[in-house]
Image (cartoon, rainbow, N blue to C red; front, side, top):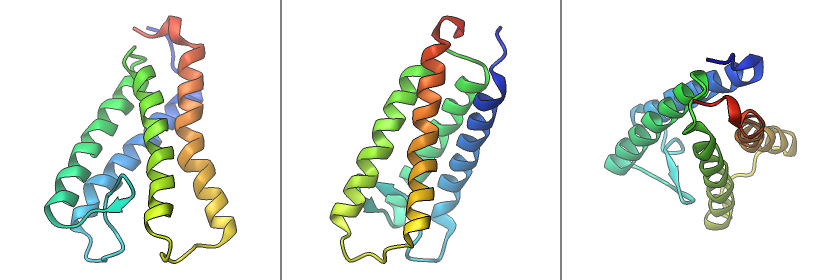
Length: 131
């Protein structure tokens, strides 16, 4: 098995952290915290179910990166598309939501979209090494 390298190791760990975040959303008492699906912040049972399902999916994705599995590559592309669509739909469906500072918006966008894109690019370049 090939070594995954520093960047893929960091990205796999970041996806584990994101999974933990998704798992924890149903336990928040803050109405502004909830799993966002297709631009809509979920509450109640939908929040618990979707947060848990996506958390499990992210753990499986992180494992695929960690172990350099072939399924990680298409999941990286799907997750990248999901993040882009979800981000755009959230802004369209919630135009009156409080807008964070431009610095925070740029940083969050670079991380939120940049990490999945970079993961997809690196895995694509190393496709022959995936098992």
